[in-house]
Length: 128
Image (cartoon, rainbow, N blue to C red; front, side, top):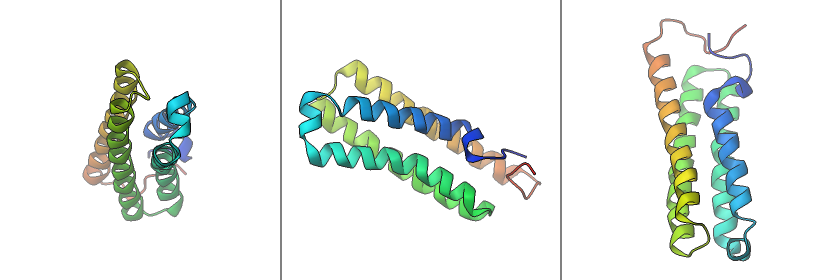
């Protein structure tokens, strides 16, 4: 019904783009030297895309939904850490907005997906 591979999921693709963006931001001078924040925001964003992939790989709808909720939690972590990066002048306001908007888009896509699955009569998320 939905995808053959997790890479087909739009919200995974967006999470991948967010991860790349965060890694680019954390290469900047001040950010790159703040090891705690740098490592935490990188882990949070990687966790977002990894949990989508892992949940998809588990096979069951209920497990997948649980991993999607974990991914949303990781996105909230990224959002909070973006505020720290902004407050410490590691990123600019436009950089903050670009990344924050992407986290919001990913959340909206996951929410829409979860709603679609809950309303679907088809028990399978995957194309055969």
